[in-house]
Amino acid sequence: MTTHRPLACVILAAGKGTRMKSDLPKVLHRVAGRPMVGHVLAAVKALDPDHVVVVVGPGMDDVAAAVAPYPTAVQQEQRGTADAVRSAFGLLEGFSGDVVVLYGDTPLVTPDTLRAMVAARRQASDPAVVVLGMRPDDPGAYGRLILNARGGLEKIVEYLDATEEERRVGLCNAGLMAFDGARMFELINRIGNSNAKGEYYLTDVVQIARGDGMACAVVEAAPAEVVGVNSRAELAEVEKLIQRRLRKAAMDNGATLTDPDSVTFSVDTRLGRDVVVGPFVVFGSGVTVGDRVEIKSFSHLEQVRIDTGAQIGPYARLRPGAEIGPDAHIGNFVEIKNAKIEAGAKVNHLTYIGDARVGAKANIGAGTITCNYDGFAKSHTDIGAGAFIGSNSALVAPVRVGDGAIVGAGSVVTTDVEGDALVVARGRQQAYSGWARRFRERKQAEKAKKA
Image 1 (spheres, rainbow, N blue to C red):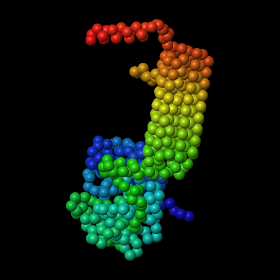
Image 2 (image 1 turned 180 degrees about the vertical axis):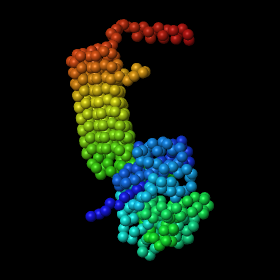
Image 3 (image 1 turned 120 degrees about the vertical axis):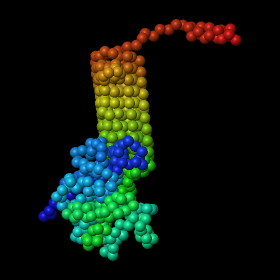
Image 4 (image 1 turned 45 degrees about the horizontal axis):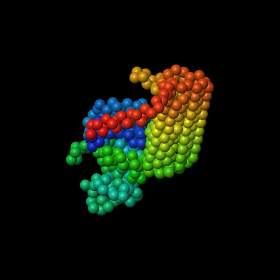
């Protein structure tokens, strides 16, 4: 019988992110619709840890709110990564399980990599520290991970301190670490700040552990998984990487993307089987799409649900609260907001439906709008099953159009329409024979007189 070994995760999120040039804390900048620290928390949650602590800086109440209900510890001064981890010690007092240290600005790390780090920490050699490594195409100025003859981690060498031989090592430090909690507190408390910046570097823990004869180990991850974000340009690069990951997952799960590189997903986008997505479609947060739906090019969706067999777009905008029923059609330049479009209904072009219900198999003509806002409050429009709304109609809410009713084109409907009725609400057409010809002749004569 395997004994449960407790697990804690410490996420460092106190960095000011000055290179972002933003009033928003760095870790709250979004990648695929989710704050970076939210991605890290999602990866951590998959491990079902016993404790999670997020280290923030003073006054970072918005970060604390974003990571709730997980507790936060405050690093009062920016004195390095080891000092940041020490800030969490009070919330981990007496903990002796395994501790994984992550960074809130490294949003692409996966649960599988974290599991591999924990497994390496628990292997028979009982390493005090496990460091996550990577082999980038261009190692550049990364710190190098130097292994010993047994394959264990001997030391971390910063690039500026490395010999020429050490600089030729391709295995680089990715920053994340896993510790034996029984030894972590004492090891980190021994880290000093005798360096040019006077900071306490977490990487120094390997030298201390090895000096005491403790084993240290390395787990490798793909370089793309451990990219950190310190600038807007790096944020854009991470967005590209996660979009590539999300597109592949969508196709692996049975969706067709006709031009994958042009489609933008949110991390919580859910697509059913045999969904077809055209070029330049944008999925904002909170979108769920049923089986056999087609979403045509240049459509934008956010916080909506689309049922089986529906057709969307091109150039459709589905806003929060839109519910599109099975086999419904939402066409080009149609905007739907907080409205339910029931089974088989058609809203095919140039239409705004907001705060409304469109009944099953109803047909909404081009240019129709639901006038849902009077400058003070939103009101509801209810369109019954099988109703037909003529083109260029305005339905002034609150109003109800009964089942099977017909609204004549160009009507402004301000009162309820009973089922199966015809309503025409527009001015009477009048014709004045010859008026247009006489008008032109008069204008031409006035022009000639001025000449």
